[in-house]
Image 1 (cartoon, rainbow, N blue to C red):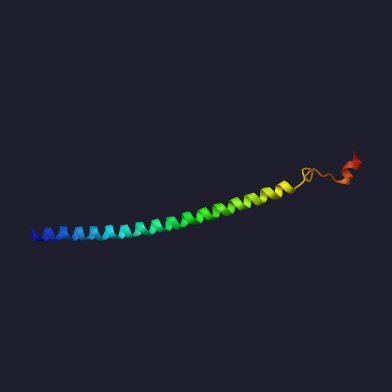
Image 2: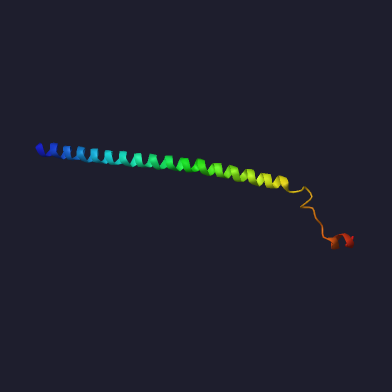
Length: 77
């Protein structure tokens, strides 16, 4: 009977250790997730800035810049 109680006590101790380990792991994962979320926000800001710069450059390109023809093509017609 005593050995059964000791066995149960050992299982409870192991369960408590595993619970503490999982809590530590969970805290570490939450911290890592917060760091990644902050990085994501920073990268989204950089992406938005890059999109604005590209859009501004595209606005500076003349509308007929892509419709150029070679002089030989005009003479052949």
